[in-house]
Amino acid sequence: MPLSSKMSSLSPFKALTSTPTARLVFVHGFLGSSADWKPVIQYLPDSVDVYALDLPGHGSAKQIRPKDFKGFVDAIKGQLRYLPDDGIPLFLVGYSLGARLLMHLAVKLDADECSIAGFVIEGGNFGLQQESERESRWENDVHWITRFRGHPLNEVLSDWYQQGVFSSLTFEQRQGVIEERLNNSGEALAEVLSATSLAKQDYLLPLLQSSKHKIYYIAGENDEKFCRLYESSKVDYEVVSGAGHNAHKDQPNKYARKLTQLLSLRDTDSL
Image (cartoon, rainbow, N blue to C red; front, side):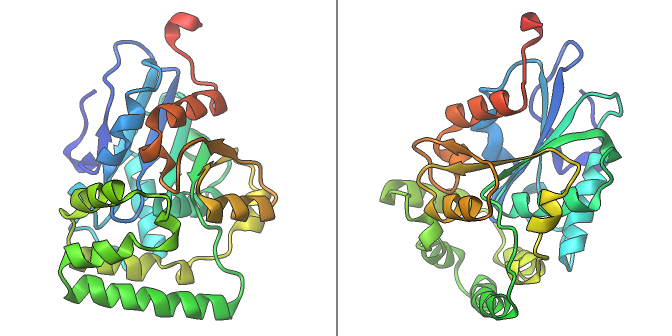
């Protein structure tokens, strides 16, 4: 499928010879890129039209750096406008930062805007309710912003992946992830974190619960933090067995099967 050069941060991953049964757009997390989704995409039905985008400050969009949360959400909306307007059901799948941005998008869009059929949220935080929580989070994020700006990236990443949410990673997995992330720009990451800090995010749960959009939640079996969050928030969620916080990376085949079941994806030869 030919794409406009303006669409450089939205990449097609499957070329189709017939009309697709569904269209998926994947949105990565902080430090990631569109390439993070390739292991999952290979397990999806062939009839699904698949794209993945690079968020501002990452990958092919490294030089694009919105100054606030709204700017990042608008960047995603801008990319979606380049998709074919052909009535094919569109699902947006986001992880971590990508999930948080998609939740903001879900509560801001009209139910039929962009013909979005549903959102899949993996490891996405609804936001902080208390001002004291936001102040504490901002203080913590300022520490990381300073480090990304002024320290060697390999040292910062080594410490970043020691955080509790990544505790399920083995030493080998942690080293592998760090190696993958070294092509990032520390300055760009600092700007991304400053603009999208959880401290600056609205508390979205009530709006998500009343949203007219279909919203699906996914967490890794070993991601204790987000399993607890989803349970305490009383939202239905799917568990990917044998996976931690980054479920799509840990278990791409199982993750793809979850998506196929949740979104009722089908091959054309099964219709």
